[in-house]
Image (tube, rainbow, N blue to C red):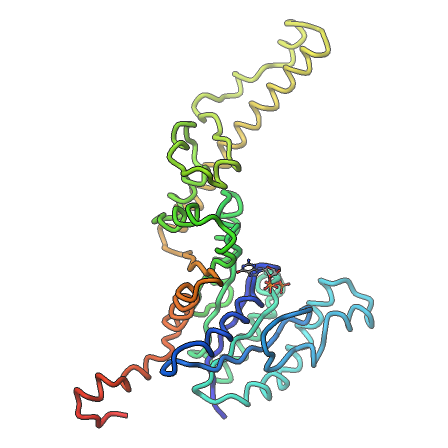
Length: 341
Ligand SMILES: Nc1nc2c(ncn2[C@@H]2O[C@H](COP(=O)(O)OP(=O)(O)OP(=O)(O)O)[C@@H](O)[C@H]2O)c(=O)[nH]1
């Protein structure tokens, strides 16, 4: 019984996990003769509906969300949790399927994306622990897929980074974050995002920082960032005493439209104060991500073979897959008289 290499593919719903699995399977077969690799793909998502890859084994043969919803009359989320706990109690099913692969084989597992399965009800972590006990400890890598549109808006960028961080910490495996759907993001904008050296810098360029409108002239146009952000007023200029008070509204005018305008001004001032605080909190989170170099993303454009190769090479590197194959190269054989296997 061997211990194949396992890529566990996770990420939010709809982020492109199944597409990633399909693309990698096709890419493995399309690689040159020296590197060609048969990539097996298994589905571990009991709620999956359609996928385009060839499935090696499928958890829905054991249990599916549809069956649980029908038989136990649970909702979709409760059914998913039930299915994963059922899998945990029937791990011999998984062991039997994994036993079909040898040491040199490569398996990608399309996992459910719900973050609750990794944090609140850490059922996926228990499955990973069991895999460790079966001897896959140094044979597993996690690939977290995030939609590229996540990094083109400040709030989504922070949310995506924290989700990726949370997945990395909970799974405790070599970890690669993949930015999917890069073909859908305008090239100029994507290049600019990828040029950024830090989360803080990216946050600033996306318009999250406390900046003046002139700073935004440097963002190339057309750019999705420009549409999504109106720079907030400077924090220093806002304090509670500057807010229009309700008493001033009655003294200035008693007409309904004047009252309405004053209320609008007050609401706008309060919103600016909140934005100032929110920016400071977000900057602190970005600094934390930067200080510990915790989150990075590898872009994936499924229409570009070089991009797919780069992602696969990065994942291989994270798990040191293929390092033992390097010594078999022709150059090395020549150097040592061809004695080395
Ligand atoms: N253009 C483009 N579309 C993509 C890409 N990746 C995924 N999609 C589309 O995004 C949608 C969701 O993709 P899936 O691969 O099913 O995403 P998923 O994460 O497996 O989804 P769930 O398993 O339902 O959570 C589908 O319509 C895909 O065709 C990509 O790289 N480029």
